[in-house]
Length: 356
Image (cartoon, rainbow, N blue to C red):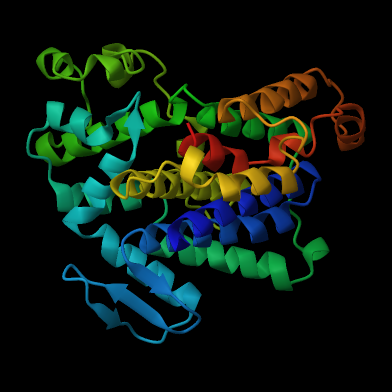
């Protein structure tokens, strides 16, 4: 259960980071966001048989044997292991099969365009293009250290209520249940990466035959014009933010990287549940029923009919926040009854993904 628990803890750190951002405390937001990245990486590794146990690191190999790794600390071991994993052919396939649009995996769509994708190359390029390679994560760790241990008031980082709200709204639209909003942008990114490897150009223009082979369920959300960047030509804000590699790292860049990492981790956990024939909505009710009540997601007297209902609170909170025209945070925090903490409860994303 280390994969699921690290993953839900990662979403919890995202929640606390969003709350700090909303409260005008970007240093705390950065500190917490790094730990969201770390938990996401731990979840991804755990889903592939790599465990970190406080300086005791092990891996379960393909034969089921337990192999002891070097006794490195968590922060060092995790990023080294993630980078190594990202350079294997399995990384691409694992990511592509653990993410889907309308129940059809990314791998099916990619193989419709490219029957023999360069798995090892595209796996490592995903790590680079989405901004969570080793150098960036070490940079994020340094930024976290600055925010955690230095005098924050002497290191000025300012955000605005309007800017924070724009990012938070974009964050939630990326994960709206059933919309596949982030997934459609990620699948375009993966296809463009493979096109770049195959032809030297990321363009997907003029590939009518290949597009026609894509499952019709994906075509409902991913049009040919979208793949050709005729429609919605810009990347999603989450992907754009994740690709920012400046130092110091903006909080939105770290949030973008953590969000994509956690989306991948969440999909891998869901895939493992399916392989193990575990139905979280039924088999894990003993856990999620208590978890949701403790987090205040629903009343113990009025349980939800479906996890998709968790989206309604978020949508209401965003609508209320959107009506506030004043720029000061006091107005936002004091006059929007459901704005805080509802728009900071990212753990909901794991629940409605796993228990659908």
